Amino acid sequence: MPDSENWLSGVFVPVTTPFDPVTGDIAPVNFRENIRRWSGEGIDGVVVFGSTGEGALLDEDEKLRLLAMARDVSALPLVAGAAGESTRAAARQARLLSEGGADAILLHPPTYFGPHLSPAALRDYFLAVADASPAPVIVYHIPKFTKVTLDPGLVGELMRHPNIAGLKDSSGDIKRFAEFSKVCGGECRLFIGSGSLLYTALELGAAGGIIALGLIAPALCARIVQCFRAGEARQAGAVQERIAPVHRDVVAAFGARGVKVALDLLGYAGGAPRAPLVPLATKERARVARALQDAGLLQGAPE
Image (cartoon, rainbow, N blue to C red):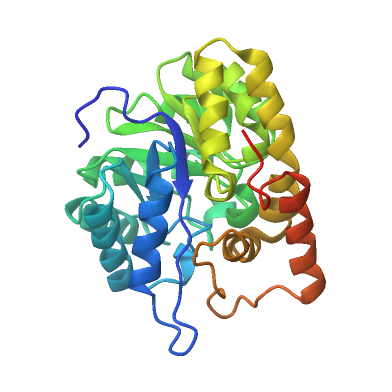
């Protein structure tokens, strides 16, 4: 666990998982080099095998290997995505990843039966995993993929558990985020999952963002948080306005596939997604390139 009391704040980047183009296995050298580079860009933490990391497509042994590699090359706080269709499976994975070096566990609801579970059943799921996990749990609200929308009342109840450290909201609904902030009353760590809403979320009391936009423009995302904390609202807003379209046209439009194309263009190791995901078409790749160009990210424009 990091020494600082405030370690769970700022910009955390949900790193992609590079794959070998021939074998389809994870590519350790590329993974390590990417994390080394991001870690030098002013970010505050790393998230491995979340949605952008194609966590749902990784084997458990691959997750443990990636976790160990990330721990080896970066001293930043490290959050690991956990999942399980049963409470038992999710709790076991949370324990395994905690023992493997994760500082916190990012846990989303079950997806298969999740949309049919009552708020009470969802509460029991999260509380049971939090009880079992040696590392603190961050509740992951991502209805786009899970088809589960968490109620503010349920979130408020979950945040009272001593081993639930906060929530990542990737709903894209800033009104719901404001409701989450209200029920938490400043007693938990809220992270926004949409890079285009980082500044607004900070105004609403967010601790920071777990944002794929931070992979594409890490220094600029970190700058938004730095300016906000320094009371430089105009500067923070200007940076947010500059890079918000990149979230819309790359992250929101194409997910991990689009982020990987952007990373290739920026000199990182992006590469192809894992099947059944397919690479972007030529027209889609051009849209990603235009978004980076319009934001000045390909020309090394000054911050």
